Length: 151
Image (cartoon, rainbow, N blue to C red; front, side, top):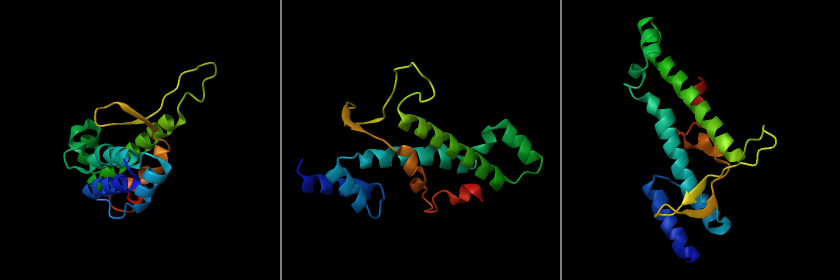
């Protein structure tokens, strides 16, 4: 696909995703051949599901320990902030490990992994999604880069 057509397609897709100013992402994808759209979709999905999913009122109600803490007088907002912060740390650590691409603390093991973009049919495009942990905070829909997690 010619660069101009690729850029227009990306602009439309980023717009659908609610990205206000996707120019840098589009340039990076078109000029550097980095899978920015796939990175954005994955990271945003992780933030919304694994981190912000705990903001829903019924999420804490599913945890017996949280119910006991609430019954003992704990503040619901504090508990939500706590579990969201723990979820962030878990997602960050997982992405960091995926970005490492192998068991860095194990010698003599020749196994590794890569997170790769796939096409519409599910087959790999050959473009790796790297540095995912570096951009996780940018997915915070509040625009505060996760600052509320540590208040």
